[in-house]
Amino acid sequence: MKTLKYIWRNVARNKLRTMLTVLSVGFSLALMTVLHGYMVMQSVWGRDADKHNRVVVMNIQGFSGALPIANVDDVRAIENVIDAVPFSWYGGTYEDQPMAFAQFATDADHAFRVWDDYKIDPDELRAWQENRQGCVADRRLAERKGWKVGDRIPLKGTFLAFDLDLQLCGLYDAPQYTDSIWFHWEYLNEGLKQANAFGVDNSGTIYAKVTSASQIPLVIEAIDARFASSQNPTRTQTEAAFVQMFTDMLGNIQAYIRNIGLAVVFSLSLVAANAMAMSMRERTTEIAVLKAIGFPRGHVLRMILGEACLIALFGGLLGIGLGCAFLEALHSVNTQIFPFGLADLAGPWLLVMLGAAAGIGLVSGIVPGIRAAQLSVVDGLRRVV
Amino acid sequence: MSEPVVVIRDLHKEFRRDAIRIPVLSGMNLEMAEGDFLSLMGPSGSGKSTLLNLIAGLDKPTSGTVIVVGEDLSDLTEGELAQWRSRYIGFVFQLYNLIPVLTAYENVELPLTLTGLSRRERDQQVKTALDVVGLADRMDHFPRQLSGGQEQRVAIARAIATDPTLLVADEPTGDLDAQSAGEILDLMQRLNSEFGKTIIMVTHDPHAAERASRQLHLEKGVLVDDVSVTATNQEQP
Ligand SMILES: Nc1ncnc2c1ncn2[C@@H]1O[C@H](COP(=O)(O)OP(=O)(O)O)[C@@H](O)[C@H]1O
Ligand SMILES: [Mg+2]
Image 1 (spheres, rainbow over the protein chains, first blue to last red):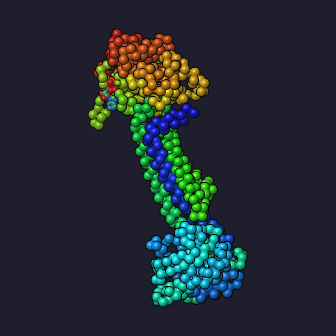
Image 2: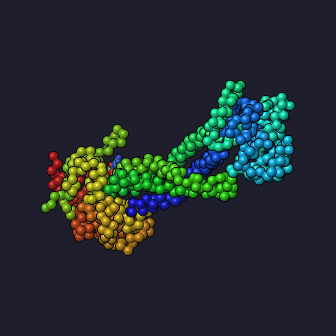
Image 3: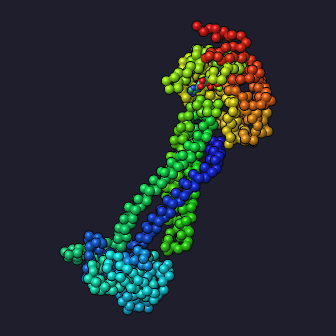
């Protein structure tokens, strides 16, 4: 079509300016795509949490409340519970890095019965069980850190006043990347007891393995009933619901990221609008000529909106391309740390990005477009005469 | 005789700059018959362009009547005026004002895209118009690849592509060397005599003005006929 060709020639007219606009739209939408990928990754992590018939017990007041270690035996005694372990977050600092990975205090004799989907060499498991300061690590974490079995892993306590001097006894394989090491709850507890520190005899949370999915509601009810009248009533939920709790917290971050993203998109619209306004100022006479010849206002407006949208759309395509290429590269470098490919990202997100691009185009084109449409032909022509 | 192409009665036009009123046309009368070729001279700032704008429906008079091709322009909305211009008026500007990103062919085709013509019909008319101005062999050139005289001929082709009734030319030779200007004037004369176009042309050059069948001077807001003081102007009360 004739008008499309004209729009296209206008886009290609000031190549540097068009390219800069395309790049700025492209890079920020690429950033949005990567952030989105990160959020998808979070949700992928909890994806199979309901497959393994595990429940998580915590104090009804949340993580700040105590869960006595004696409760673990009580949970094990409940019907249809296969096994249960304490599972306590240590949150220590490794080589001056806080939160370098997750560390949990648990029970070496029972842990791999609760996480029966995790694989560990029996000899390594025995070595851990026999070494009071021993620990096991997710194999991918060990690879990432370059640990070998036998290495020492010193951890400094942050909110717990006891430093750990751990020795790596074995590596386990989990279906999904856990980014964790496990050590003896007893080792930590004795240290805390000797230091007379806060947190003694606390199991943190209790993970329990249930015989079958259909038994889970009854087990949850039984556990919470068992402790209802104790000093520390509990709140038990499925592992999936527990993960969801964290995802919900992340949800706030997601909303935050989304709002920042919207702000970025909006400010970009202004950048693009400025570029469009510059183009229009340079073309004032030309627009006046079009209108003199008989181009109606709507036609002029549509042409300019079309130009702005075309530029923004190129930016959008570039952004999606760059963002996806980046995520795909992460994915191919390490499928475990980055457990998803484009398939997890596709569909609606591409539409959202294209929509954002179109939005940037419309917002950036509307003011210059309306001004051009309303330009007085006489004034526009007088500028050259 | 068919009805006149342009009828102007008691036309006043003034501009306002803040509180100051600048009267440009004050009680002007004019009639142009079909097939007239009128040249308009006058000192710079006397209101020649203003008059052309009013005739072409680009501007509104302060008072008075402007009837062009049988249409009282004050009756038309801006949208209607745009459509009306695309049908009846062809523009030629001093600085050609071709669209730089479009080829000669595409520039000439531009006004035709506003009509309901098919691609083939448009093609036919573009080629005819370029033939008339003698630039059929340059149709794929961009304006920057053409000389000033050639650009102006493309601009004329663009103005006549839709076969308008009235050609409005504001100093079409003002920016050209003598030879190119001569060619443009030849072309204007041919459009008038051979194709029967009614033309109103502003010029500073008395030789150019002589090409027209009628010469007028704009002075102090009213028209003065060069050849003989016309009845139109004497009619004024
Ligand atoms: N849009 C406008 N606003 C204010 N003054 C104007 C405008 N257009 C024209 N004028 C004034 O009207 C007078 C006539 O202008 P113009 O018609 O362009 O003259 P010419 O074409 O004869 O040189 C000039 O004094 C000019 O300054
Ligand atoms: Mg002028």
